[in-house]
Length: 172
Image (cartoon, rainbow, N blue to C red; front, side, top):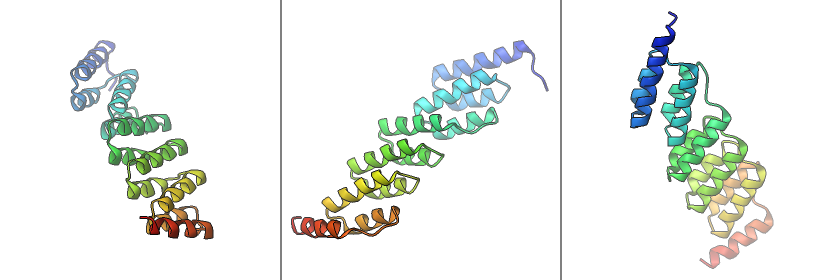
């Protein structure tokens, strides 16, 4: 059923008010009544800026589309900035760019979240980022993590890495 211009404008106004009040789930429900494509895209943008993964996905579906790589990357960044690393990983699984995956691996390593770094690296981190991750694991004497990280690049630890690992374990 085609909505009248007035009705669509009223629905858009309702969506805007809900967003302004911070009622994002209500804004999504209001948008389902027939909001304009532009208002729905604005709602997607708000959800992304707030780090609301499920809201962003649901809002994008209202325009019969998936989130773009750029939107996913922004979601990942927002979640990281808010300290929501697990959510950032979930957002990255939606199809983040290689650059954003690399950045998230780095963040996980910096925060000491090694198992999260491995999980994230499996999403498609660059060879260089994985090698850097292996180096950190070797420096910290983390044998299993170093081996697992090296396997992500379809390789074993090098003789030099094993020597370094041995040295670092003795110094712990």
